[in-house]
Amino acid sequence: MHLFAVYPVWNANNTFGFERVPWQELNEAATITTVSRFMKQKMWDFGVDPRVIPNGIGTQWLEPCDRNVGSGSSGTCSICGSTRTG
Image 1 (tube, helix red, strand yellow):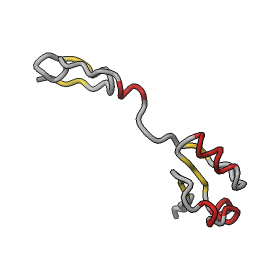
Image 2 (cartoon, rainbow, N blue to C red):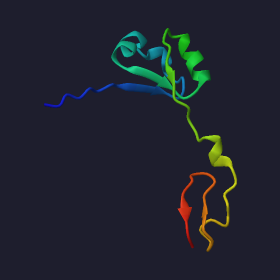
Image 3 (cartoon, rainbow, N blue to C red):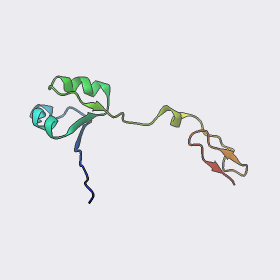
Image 4 (cartoon, rainbow, N blue to C red):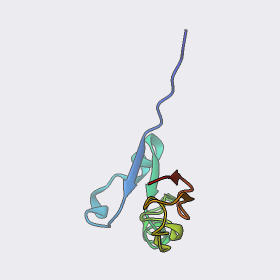
């Protein structure tokens, strides 16, 4: 017999309508998350301490790509580490 647990998560990405959210009940029923430290601090005003799940991409994805990878020569992608041949 397999038992599975479900953990509800509620994510906030803006403050629109915050004054109407039943924060105490939501905090008891779900893990509250947000996308930034700024939003976390805004949510403190409503009596909750959410976990921050950053929104966006990591800085390594902003690095220039190796244009030789995949264009006929063998090499490893500097971002994801995959090896391709042309």
